[in-house]
Structure formats: structure tokens, C-alpha cells
Length: 238
Image 1 (tube, rainbow, N blue to C red):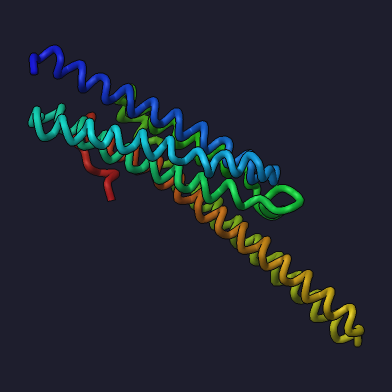
Image 2: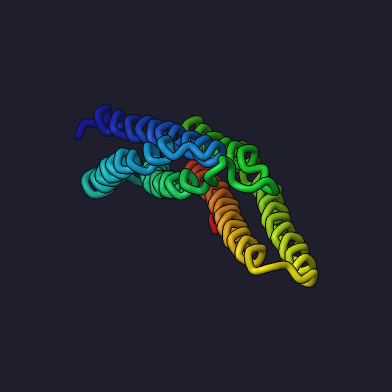
């Protein structure tokens, strides 16, 4: 392959990875909206549309494999191809998490009152978008800044999970206090139903927080691979 065509292939690979990032971002934003509002139809659209991301991923995987096998790139070109392969893997996993997140909305909308779900979701999504932008621009400093933001995000997720569990314990304590007052069988059945609904809401909330934290982790992975691509620096890879 002539050198100019080879360079075109590398440039196209980078452009296609960025385009995949934009596609995943659209799916992710829709998932956050679906969960935050309890929009079942939008949630189904997110889940059913995941095949488009998977097909994009497989096509880019083939492109990376072809460049590695046929062109045997070295130095910076090799880092671009290998980093791109890692980046699309993380983006595909963000899309998978989006399909999970889309289904966490409750029947009355939202995830759990103790979780600032939309804010957390938007911030995690912004981290992914910023990581893809850093990959596109080859911005090493932005990569380090994204990794630094992750510590704060992890702490916010921890606090959200604790708040959900705390509310569950307080509600259970209140039910136990009422039970000691000698309530009837009908009240007991109602309490059991309320407890089941509460446990379901708590379970969905904890899963949602966990998945948002994973989305942010994938953003850091993209930043880490980009930093390695740009500066041959593996400090963020773990």
C-alpha cells in the first residue's frame, strides 16, 4: 500500500473511532433520559438499537486487525492502532451499560429520590465525551484531567449508594415500630407489599449507581489509552 493510502487509512480509523464515540454518546444520553423519566418506549429503543453499536465495533475491529496484519505499523502508528482497538472496546462496553441503565427507571419515573441520577449520569457521559475528544485531538493533558475527575465521581457514587441504603433502613425501622402497635392482617399485607416495592427500587438504584461508576471508569480507560498513544506513557493504564 502506498504511503499516502496508508496514512489515509490511519486518519480514517481515528475519524471512525470518534464517530463511534458520538453514536455511543447518543445511545447513552437516551438511556439516561429513559431511566430518569421512566420512559419504557425510549428504553426499548436504546436496547433494540444496541446492535448498531455492535456492528460498528466489529467493523472497526476488522480495520484494526487489517492494519496490524498487513501494514505492520511501528512506533506512533502502532500505538494509534492498538489504542484505537482498546478505545472501541471501552466504547462498546459503555453502550452495553447504556442498555442496562435504560431499564432502571421506576414505574412512576426516576430511579430513587436519594440518587441524583440525571446529574451523575450526565457527568459520567461528559467524561466519556471528553475522553473521545482527547483521543481525537491527541490531548495528553485532558487525559490526565479526566483521570483526576474520576476520584471525585467515585466518591459521589459511594455517597449515593450509602444514601439509598440509609433510606431503606430508616423505612424498615419505621415499619417495625408500627408493627409493635398491633396492626391487623390487612395492614401487614400492605407492609409486605410496600417492602417488596421498596427493595425493588433500592436494587435498581444501587445497580444504576454501579453502572454509572463503570461508565466513568471506561472514560478513564479511553483517556489512559490515548495518553499512551500520544506520549508512550502508561501511567494511567491499570
